[in-house]
Structure formats: structure tokens, C-alpha cells
Amino acid sequence: MPVHLQKEIDKLKKQIVLLAGSVEKRVADAVKSIDQRDAELAQRIKDTDQAIDQTEVEVEEECLKILALYQPVAMDLRFIVAVLKINSDLERIGDEAVNIAGRSLNINAYPKIEINFDLKTLARDVMAMLKRSLDALVNMDAVMAHAVIDSDDEIDETVRVLFQQVKNEVRRQPEKIDYMIEYMRINRHLERIADHATNIAEDIVYMIEGKIVRHNYET
Amino acid sequence: MNEISIETRALDLFYGDFQALTGITLDIPARQVTALIGPSGCGKSTLLRVFNRMNDLIDGVRISGEVIIGGENILTPATDLLALREKVGMVFQRPNPFPLSVYENIVFGLAVHRLARRNEYADIVEQALRSVLLWDDLKDRLHYSALKLSLEQQQRLCIARVLPLKPQILLMDEPCSALDPFATMHIEELMQELKKEYTIVIVTHNMQQAGRASDRTGFLYLGKLIEFDETVKIFTKPAQTMTENYISGRFG
Image 1 (tube, each protein chain N blue to C red):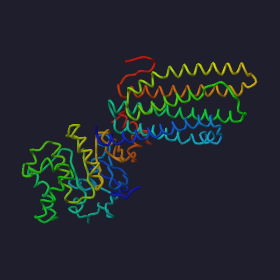
Image 2 (cartoon, one colour):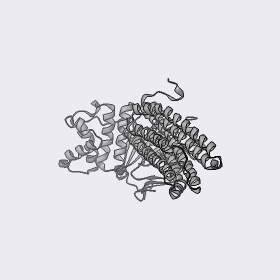
Image 3 (cartoon, rainbow over the protein chains, first blue to last red):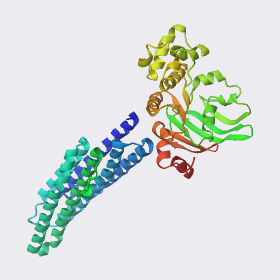
């Protein structure tokens, strides 16, 4: 491969890995802000999302530049296409972190209520899944990417159980419905993050193996 | 912008009645690769040749405007052409080594310009060949005929031959068009090395090459400079529709 293309690709890889790291931290902080009732942290996540958007634009421009100037082929082409898509998923995960932070602020406005809702397990599993999808990206690890894709079903099951738990709580304490709804929405945001992590893993499989594995459909 | 190596101001060039260049004004930055692109006959090679006054060899050429290199307008009759061509080297489309040995090809210019003592030649030859990454291949064949080298090696030699004259500017007119893709890639990589010390202006038909190898790109059409900007800008969001249409293969 020409040296200049190799340099550009290395640079792009660093950029996307940095973006992935920031997004991962923002999700962790958003979840922490609920757990620790930390309104300041939640507000900070909302206020600084622009940095993620800015990086997303930069990564996209870098990809377009490489496509226009170097016409990469084969693995290099798949890498650029995968980065373009992963970039977009990361930005959306960043938005979900902002959404969770928003819910966190709302929850903090209420006095603490004991409810039977196992947010911690779901958050832990989703963050582990996101982390593994990003590790698969850093290490170009298709085996790990496949494992991430497989784990999405478990997340969906946990989400279903939590949805039921919230419903039960609403029945038990209907006057607290506004509070409960915030948890239902967090449940949904975490599920979306898991979906984006799955997309990232699918793009990694495409990049490494050249196979399209989304929609349970192989070519 | 960086230091400017070649300032061109309102340059018009006529071959007899035919106007080949019209009002060209551009600043070519030092120690970067600048590519000139455009369809055949657009004037890109003519413009390149103005920079070391090669067009003087053609009958009926008239030039007006200014081309300033090293603070001097090189279009004045007072310009010392030998000194100019020492400062502004040219590499052509087809490798054109002299029918002499590798060694003699490199020292030829030194002898003409009386630039070095004979006992300095060996070091100069080694340094020139190292700069174009030929030394390891040719150090045991310095006295072989240059015409026996591969085309890529010949082209590298033609570049090496210019370097001992310590030019500031290297003009390259389609330097890779006679080479296969691998040799092309090697010459492009060499350009990236050379630009650390030299200003490089390359004329190319190959738009992909302009994209890969240059920092700035000028698009010429019918003798006019339509657009001149950073290569990234030209190839992702050019300002002129005509540039857009040319680089995307809609005409030309």
C-alpha cells in the first residue's frame, strides 16, 4: 500500500478510536449521574455534546478526503466505509448519553423513591457490550465483533424484563407515574445504545471479513 | 500561506496568433507539491515551461506579465538562462538519460555549470543517488550505461541528475506517464521526500495522481487558471462548477 495512504488511514484510526473513547466515557458518566443523583455531571454531559458532533464532522471529512484523494480499494475501502458508519453510530450513542443525562436531571428533581428496577445490571451489560465493540474496532477483532452481535439478544431480554418491572411499579404506585416514565425512557435509551454497539460490531465484521451480517442475512 | 516560490502575475503567452495562456496569476508555495491539471491543450505544460523559459526555444512565442522567482522577474531579457535553469530543474515525461554512464549522467550538469571540483564528484554522485533511493541498487554499476536501467530507474536518475545543481524548484512534466503503477507509486513517494527540500510543480493528466501526490492543485482550461486551491478542497468541494465537472470526468 502507498505510504501516504497508510499514514492517512493510521491517522483516521486514531481519530475514530479517540471519538469512541469519549463517547464511552459519556455513557458511563450519564449512568453514573443517575446512580449518584449528580445533576451537575448530567448537565455537563448535555452542555458538551457539541464536541462529539464536531469530531463526527471531522472524521467524516477525513473519510471523504481519503476517498477523493487516494481511491482506496479492498480492505482499505471497507475500512473507510466502516469508519463512516461507525462514526455515525458513535455520534448517535453520544446523543443517547445526552438523553440519559436529561432523564437523570428530571429524576433528580423528584425526591428519591425506592422502586424495584434493576437499572444497574442493564447499564453494566450495555456498557460492557459497547466496550467490547470498541475493543473489536481497536484490535480489528472479528471474533469479538461476532460475540457482541450475539449478546444483543440478551440485552433485549433484559430490557423486556425491566419494562415489565416498571409496569409493575406503575401499577403499585400509580401516583408516581411521571417518575416511573423517566426510568422507562432510560431503559429505551440503553437499548438503543446496545443497538448502535451491534451496528458497530456488524461494520467491523464487514470490514474484516467482507461479509454483511446485519438483518440476519449473509452474502 | 507559506513562503512563495514562484509568483506568476497576469501572464499571457501567445504562440503566433494563438493565445495559449491568459491572465495567469498564481502563487506556488515553497516546499510543497503543486499539481497542474486540465485537459490536453489547456496550457498546463506551457505554463510549466514558462517557469524555466523553455518556451524560448519555440519560434513566434510572445510572453507578457511577470514570473517572479527568488525576487526577480525571470521574463526579462536580462535573465541569465543558465543560472535560471540551475535554479529551476526539469524532469520530462519520458526518462531521457544521456547515453552515458550512470555516473556521467549525474556529473554532466556539474561540469557544464562548473559547480564542483572533480575530486568532489564521487560524494556528489552518491548523495544524488541516495536522494532518489537508487544508491543501493546502482552503487556497483555506476559505470554501466544509463540506458540499460529500467524505465523507473532511468526516471529516478533523471531526477537525481538535477539535484547536484542544487535547484530550488523541480518541474515535472508527466513524470510517471511512461511508468507502470508500482514505479509510479515509488516516484510519488519520492516526491513526498523531495518536497522537504524542493518546491515541486508537476503537470499530470492523471487526476488521481494529483490527488494522491500534491498539496495544491491548479485546474487550467483553455489557457485560463479556473481554480487554484488546496488539493483536498479541489477534490472534495471545488468552488467552480467547471472544476467539479472536469475532476468528476464529465468533460475533458
